[in-house]
Length: 186
Image 1 (cartoon, rainbow, N blue to C red):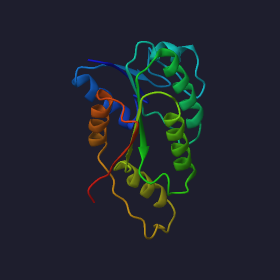
Image 2: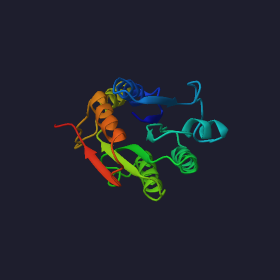
Image 3: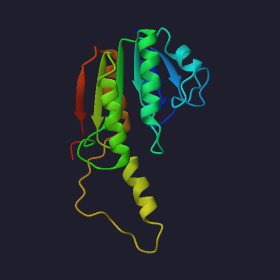
């Protein structure tokens, strides 16, 4: 099978994706800020990143931070992937980022563009938010004595394990050179 690097491999999606890829017989490397032997902060790049991508066939880029730095992280990852001759870069993104004016969504869209223009084989999977996001939002909204709820917001959360399964399929396949959208049924 192939050697696949999962960035953000200890996160909500990355952890499940890593398990799925290994179950499918792939050699999987986990890159995160603290996971050894590939403990790398993508925002800073560095020599550890070059070692992590050396000999990798595919990278699935799940690392992200709502606190910023995703564009810098993607730029470092792309540069290392080019240098190592990686054949396929798969990126997880969000449905609607081209229509929603949130800063985090604008950053995700900018990363998509960096990947499209990278010269690497690439695939982007845009999915709806995972089930845990509405729970986290409601936890925050429930703190004051009065709970304000957004009106007119449509949401189709999706199970993270389903997304991990789809990403595993895409990582094992050829670069699509485009975006795929996948949402929960309702």
